[in-house]
Length: 170
Ligand SMILES: Cc1cc2nc3c(=O)[nH]c(=O)nc-3n(C[C@H](O)[C@H](O)[C@H](O)COP(=O)(O)O)c2cc1C
Picture (tube, rainbow, N blue to C red):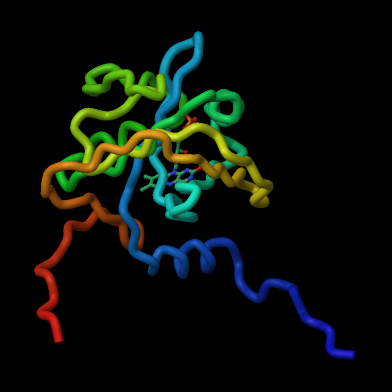
């Protein structure tokens, strides 16, 4: 019988560095409760399903906001524009008052949303799954805002990037 060797032959730094070769956009997940708004920068956002409309992101178990996010009745996933690096940095600082000086409003789902944003997915919770040292949040999209032609903020190998010139077709 073949046995599969699952002992890792790399350390967490190597894993993080290899994963950083996958270029992503950046989003800020926002929710609120009776103690006020919460927000977390993520690049673990992904589409899941069109019917029903599902998206996902992963949240570290160490986050101050985790318990509050798990209880949220609605949350928004705000895809950042190219000039919003400062917002990405602010919502990545643990525990701070991230919302002062940020322009946001309450969306139709009841969750806070960023204004402006490249796109906003307002969601209600669909499922939470164990993801090792993270929790996988799957949200059902209930409202969409995706207007304008601005460029997104990108993240690659630990640095922010902007879109390069589109490749010629063919
Ligand atoms: C570009 C970038 C992407 C990030 N992506 C994630 C992510 O997908 N999941 C996560 O848990 N933390 C991610 N973080 C770290 C969190 O934003 C940070 O730990 C969080 O804001 C702390 O929130 P807290 O106040 O709830 O502890 C990312 C940070 C940056 C700068």
